[in-house]
Length: 204
Image (cartoon, rainbow, N blue to C red; front, side):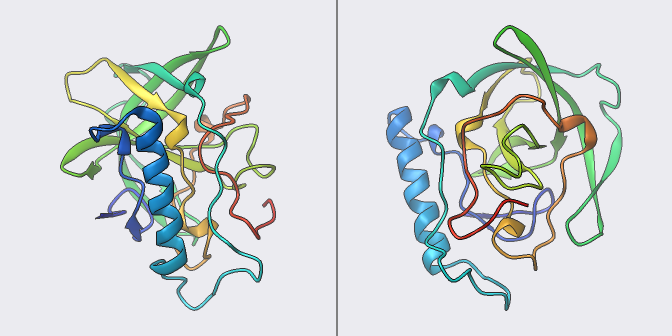
């Protein structure tokens, strides 16, 4: 397990990409979700806030390979290569580098999400992609979710898998400092994949 530094919210990361393991896709995703359930039950630091009364762990949409899409990294998109500051849940600013935009299609319509550097999971580089969508504040955390996208500096096409989308730690405890998705990363479509609102939590 690794730290959510510098891209995330400074808590232990149970969201390393299980689909790199020598398991089937479904088994790798199941293993990751079981590990996350154990983590929030036994290891998560609530930082003096404590879980909601009826909290019994994270929840997810059913696995759906429709939401595992090929995305092209547009390194010529506006802002690519620039250093930016993302607002966070505690009012601070987080410094990041814009790697470009991930361009992908859903139901024949082009979608774009800005991706950020740097991040390393299990020794492998990933892009950090914070986003909001049509489920935010309804089925998923209102402030948005994150997805990590494995990449190599020479890759143009990447595996963008929303089944691995996860909540920032501030979805569980407001004591964490979590970057918000930038305005351009607010999708009008509903991404019905990945982590939902934790049980015992109301929509924001």
